[in-house]
Length: 281
Image (cartoon, rainbow, N blue to C red; front, side):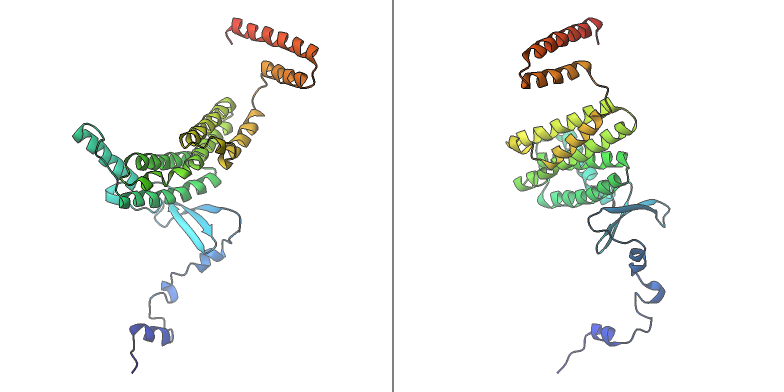
């Protein structure tokens, strides 16, 4: 005895163009993909005009593509009528604190934390795409937003694992936020501000490793290496500090054991510093 299932008819019938997906109703994205080849090892992104008239972001993957909104939640969904779950939970937190006089007793359960994690991945794809396209304000916005996700989960998740599972990504998000901010300053010729931004970013990452008792991991961190390379590039644009230049010469003289030269350099450094202090520079 054989049983016929509806899908048997679908599989066995010849295509007469009547079923969904046929002819003009096809949802096959092959034509789109054929016009945009995938490049292994590269992050392939672009901006396009959506049929709704709004700008969209697309990221080409090996098996297809991701399409994201440029503003709001990347998938365009509005949970509970808010821009994102993060906005909704932050609003709930404020309401709780207003009613009870403090945030004590406010918690996020496992499902709520999962919503936040899944949403953070969407924003990650977007800020990575925006960085490739040089849209640094968008990167700053989305990385700052994802850092708020780590903060709210770390403070209010009911389960300990939910409080810490995202923390491993904090150095990366800080690094991307720092690079985007400093890149804007660098492009504007604000080299000193850019250098200070990178220095602050490195200090924030150092604080992270200290907090988790991993001081030795700081120098091995890929995020730290990226920011230090950027700092070196920025320093090339900074005017040379005469005192710093003399101090470098002093170190080289000491290393060569040229103590007479070192003594002269120390005297000159002291004179320069005294002149600077007297001039108020």
